[in-house]
Image (cartoon, rainbow, N blue to C red; front, side):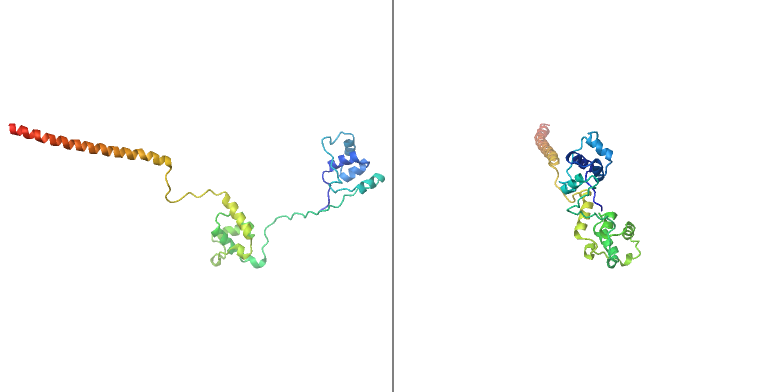
Amino acid sequence: MANTLLMPKATAVWLVDNTALSFEQIAQFCGLHPLEVKAIADGESAQGIKGMDPIMTGQLTREEIARGEKDGNHRLKLSEPKVRVPESKRKGPRYTPLSKRQDRPNAILWLVRNHPELKDAQISRLVGTTKATIEQIRERKHWNSASLQPMDPVTLGLCSQIDLDIEVQRASSGRPAAAPTGDTLLPASMTERLEPKVEAVADEDKELDANAVFAKLSALKSKPEDEDEDENR
């Protein structure tokens, strides 16, 4: 990748204010038009831009600036960066060696059975397969379904344990928590509501017992009176 100047306009502002370089030299170095550099010098352009020192950023040396100031035809050269940043590789489908491709359906079957929360896209990232293959194995429509044996993709070397744990965690993070099963304690509010009912039942039992006692007493009193009336007759 070609080395490019960082913040060309801010660099041009600094070079205009701090060097004796010509507008053409600054324009060539910063990738601007000479008239734009002239407008910067006249204060008609880049008024809100703070100048950036290319020497401090390692993009230009003092010797190079001095050489340009002495020779108006000299073209400033951008300094080589001290640290090379590797270019980021474009992410593509996971490559699976030929020796392990035959184990891929077994790994897919293991993931489908042991981690049903994983989406097809996640399984595809882990073992480097297609959604169509995953769907065939999930629905047992794969041409070799009868011979497939679930096998851990980490053991097969198709993915790392860290990658598998990350995908499982991602899939589980959006799932609702499972509802509690079995007997549970009733809330205090419910138990408090039940207490008055128990007391009310007890009070009713007491009232019933008292009525029964009074009824028996009145029955005993009535018997002697009936016997006296029979004797008088």
